[in-house]
Image (cartoon, rainbow, N blue to C red):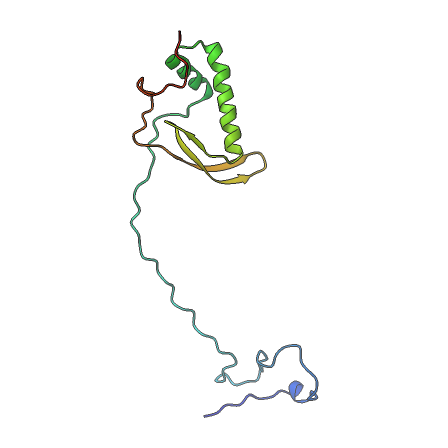
Length: 156
């Protein structure tokens, strides 16, 4: 069975040499029978479902509140035995240097703190957001052992 498209008066009366603005394959006649297909529409493919994967729990246990500068200075004074008036400018200078290095996108390798690797950076209206990874060695202890090389010069 063959079906033919009916021509309307507007398309039949046009001269053969004139081109229309829309391609002929897009035009559909409003008087075409409903059994005639005017376009070839394919059904959408079925959605592909992803295979579930096992996700391991990587939650971080929070030991307490954030470490503030004042508490850091107090701990440095307690651990080193240096007076607070000498420790405070040193700690503040160290924090400034670390902040500048991170804002420049530089990595840090400060054991036992760990190795900080810069991932990405985003500028916002009032802040810079830096995403970084810190990798700490499992063998690194939080406190410096007396057997390890000390950063400070021994007192004479």
